[in-house]
Image 1 (spheres, protein in one colour):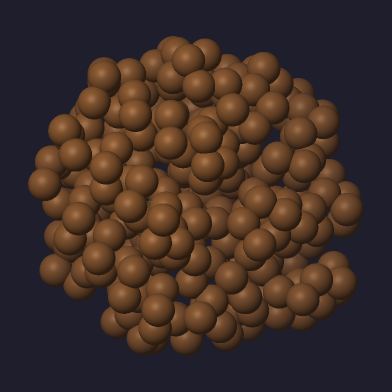
Image 2 (cartoon, rainbow, N blue to C red; image 1 turned 120 degrees about the horizontal axis):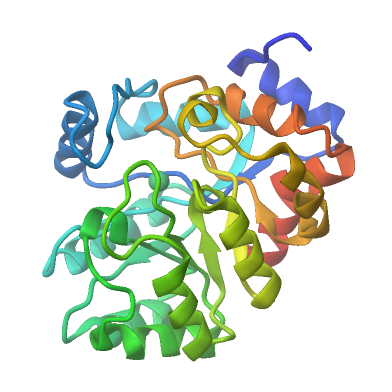
Length: 291
Ligand SMILES: [Zn+2]
C-alpha cells in the first residue's frame, strides 16, 4: 500500500463514500498556552519522554485551513487545564473559537476545584458538546471528591468527555484503568471517551469498554509508527476492535503530532478491518454521538 500523503486524504475519504472526516481529538487553545505546550514537546519534557517534533506549528487560522483542506468536516477543539483556576479562561476562549469556526465542536475542560460542578453545569447549559480532561498532565486523581458532582452532571446529561486515562506516553500516579474504572463503577452511564485507545493498556481499556456500554475509545495516535515503537497494539486484539466497531472514534491529536495527518488514516487502514469499520470510525460513530 503506498504511503498516504495529506494531499491524498480527500480522495481516500471519497473512496470510502464518506462526506468527510469527523475528528474528535483535535486541539485548539489560546496561543500563549499552545506556545507553552509546543515548547514542552520541543524539550521532550518528562511527560513526553522522547523527541516529538510538532508537524503543524501554525496559526489558528492556518490550522483551520489545513483541516478544511484535509476534508475534516467536523472537529473538536480540546483545551485542558493543567492546574486549578484556569478552566474558566480556557472555556471562555473555546466558546469564542467555536463561535468563529463553524466546523468546531463547542468544547470545555475542568479541574478538581470547588466550583467545578457549577461551571461544568453552566457550560452544558451554554451548549458545550464535549469536555476534555487530562490527568496525565494535570496530575490529579479522577476519583477526587471535588469531581463527583462533575461526573454526575456529565452522566445525567449524557455529555461526552475525552479522558486521557492511559499511561502513555509516561505513567503517572492516577493513569491506568484502575482510577477511571472506579469512576465508571460509581457513574456507569458516563459517556467517557478513552483517548489514545488507552495506550499502552490496550487490553485493559478494551475490557473496560466491554463492561461499560457508554464508553468509547478514540484512535488518537494509536496504530501509528510513532506509537508502535513504544506501545505496539497487540495484533491478536484486532478482532476486539471489530466487536467494538460502534464505539471507536477517529481522533488524531492534530496539530501536536510528529508525522503528517494522513499517517493516522493509513495506520487505521492497515489494521485491515475493512471499509465498513473505517466508515464507522471516521464518520458514522462520531456523528451518532456528537451530531
Ligand atoms: Zn491530545
